[in-house]
Image (tube, helix red, strand yellow):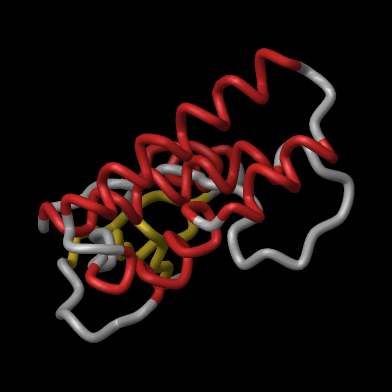
Amino acid sequence: MLIAEWALHATEPKASAHVLAVLARATFEAHRTESQENVQTAMSPVAIKNAAEEAGWVVEREEVVVPESGLDDGYWETGTVVGEEFMEEVEKEVADERVKAVLRSARDATVAAAKAAGGAKKVRCMDVWVATLVAK
């Protein structure tokens, strides 16, 4: 089985905002009952490998790829978090004040990282983890 997933790591400094945005979005999505967002759950390569091993697969080969510029996922996913609508939805849909505080902080960190990249449109994509898994 071949698998590719965001690595939740940024070799390129301008991709840091993408990592933060995905973690913020996944945290929010974990507290929603319905959503059409692209990011639903963030699983690290370690978590994916652990789940695969529990299901009878082992990693035969893996590597991390740094995407070239021009791939827009980093910009798109960062844009869903830095926009004002993100916190408006959080305020409406999340009851727990501690979770709201985490999401506010995650958004603030994403905004700062996007600003450091030159704005959300300049955000690069985070690294991609690719692996070949074989049945045990």
